Image (cartoon, rainbow, N blue to C red; front, side):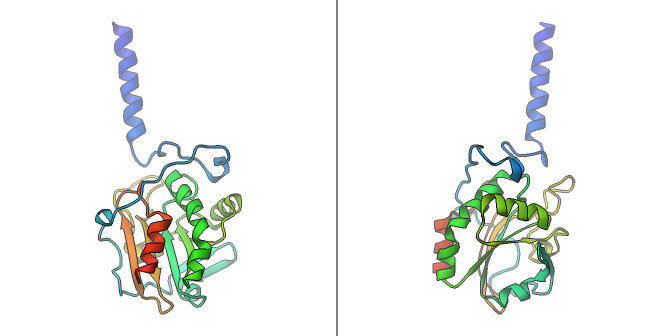
Length: 210
């Protein structure tokens, strides 16, 4: 009886530990470990599930806030000189399997977005080297932007406030922003649940609704 109680107590402790944040989500893995792993399923987000967070449509983005790429420092002002942007805010290319799945998935609509006049970018708080490794491993056809200090994430008002300690501090809500060349936000969707992201079809429908 005592042995049964000890086993049950250990099981409960493990279960509670697995549910805590910011411990790794189930199935989380670094970008080096994606080969041969089952794909994490990302649920689509409904319009009703999009939360009112961050900069509003018609507001201006922080064009001078610094970002990093493997080529050096840049900012949204310089990026928008190349054309209107679709900016995907994501938590991490290193440890968030939902982010990894989304970033791989949107690779399929780079051409569709270009045909509509938009350049696609991913943004996370990972380092440029981490992003570059993931990009090369997954053969991404769009650029990743590094916001290691979460300066741009904060300027957009997208920091997820539920994380106050651990590696998840500074991550954004999973979000998609459409930005015109002048820096004005023309459409957006923000998910309060990191497991739910817009599908490629939903992203293209958002662009087509403009």
